Amino acid sequence: DTEVTQTPKHLVMGMTNKKSLKCEQHMGHRAMYWYKQKAKKPPELMFVYSYEKLSINESVPSRFSPECPNSSLLNLHLHALQPEDSALYLCASSQVGTGVGTNEKLFFGSGTQLSVL
Amino acid sequence: QKEVEQNSGPLSVPEGAIASLNCTYSDRGSQSFFWYRQYSGKSPELIMSIYSNGDKEDGRFTAQLNKASQYVSLLIRDSQPSDSATYLCALKGNQAGTALIFGKGTTLSVSS
Image 1 (cartoon, one colour):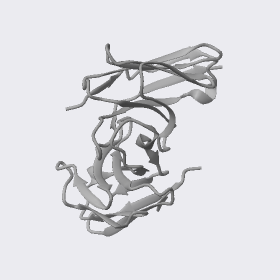
Image 2 (cartoon, each protein chain N blue to C red; image 1 turned 120 degrees about the horizontal axis):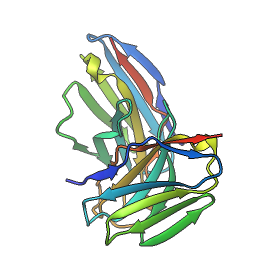
Image 3 (spheres, chains in turn yellow, brown; image 1 turned 90 degrees about the vertical axis):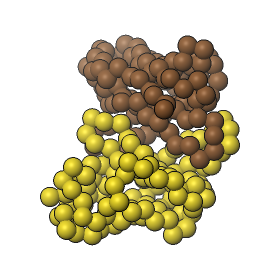
Image 4 (cartoon, rainbow over the protein chains, first blue to last red; image 1 turned 135 degrees about the vertical axis):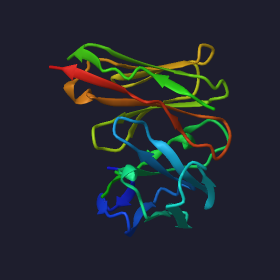
C-alpha cells in the first residue's frame, strides 16, 4: 500500500468546471511533486515543491495551479481544462537530499484518472 | 537536457526465463538510478535503486550500473506472468531539488 494518498481516484469534468486534486503524505518528506502521464507515455513533471517552495515546469499551462498548504499536503487546482488534459495525474513525495542516497527515492500515490469532456 | 533511452518493446519471454531490460542515459552527472514497475492503469512502483557501479541484487531482481558506459540494466530471473508490466528507468542528478527524469519504459510480457 502506498503511503501517498490521492483523491479522487477518478474525475470527469467539463471544460468550464473548476475542480481540485488532493494529495497527502505522512512520511515526513519535504519534497512533493505533480506528474502527468498520458497512456503509454512516461510520467512528465509538472510541479515540484521543496520545503514548500515551488519550482515550475514552464511548459505547464496556467489552467493548472498547484498549492502546498503545508509539507504534508499538495493540491492541484484545475480550471478551464481542455480534452487533451485527460490523463493520469500522479502525486509523489521524497526526502530532499543534497547528494546520493536513499533519500532520493520517489514514492507515488495511486493517481487520479482525469477525463475532460 | 537529461535524456533516458529505453527500448519500448514489447519484450516477450517465457515463464521461468531471464528478462533483461536496458536503459542508457546522456547526462554523466546523473548519480541516482531507479527502476519502476507500472501495471496498466496503476501508478509506478519502485522496485530497485542503484547508486554505484556494479550489481545490486534484491530477490529475483538485479540492477546493474556502468557509469563509464552510461547504462543501467535490470535483470529479472525466473520471470513470472505477474511480472508482465511496463518497466520505467529513471535517474536523478546530484543537485538538491532536482526531480526524476523517466525513460519511456519497456513493456515486458511473460507468457505461461
